[in-house]
Length: 213
View: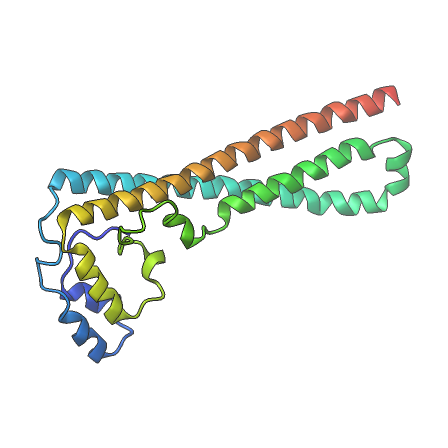
């Protein structure tokens, strides 16, 4: 997402699938050491890199937790639904439909929230609330994935010609990635809370049904 220095070899790597003519056009839009203008300080670059790496690691952790919850609840439903179908009369007689209904609802809600965590964000979310007069960041793939190479290289040069604008783009990328990460963590916490409460209510209701009915 972040770009700290560009040269012509970068464009060769980025576009190894494009024709030589396109790459030659791209070379005209960049000059080594000049595209970013004033360089960011080493300390600032290290801070940005560390923050980005932390965000990536935390995002992977959130996705991993969501995947665990999704798989666990899907397995529970896989065993639960056939069992209910084959023992319907006993379940109705013993009033076990109450705890089983609570468990099923818990699984469905947890799966839904876990899916929200794993679902990719809309690219529009990364420019939500952005000043219309400010150019979008050229360092986030969601802003340029549908642009032609020549158009992207031209826009990258224009957007990166001002050091202050580059810093604003980097801050913008970090903000929206962090905002998305915050949503993921909030949803994960909600999914775990709902799962724990649902399991607890299932056990309590099962005990009540078995001992009092």
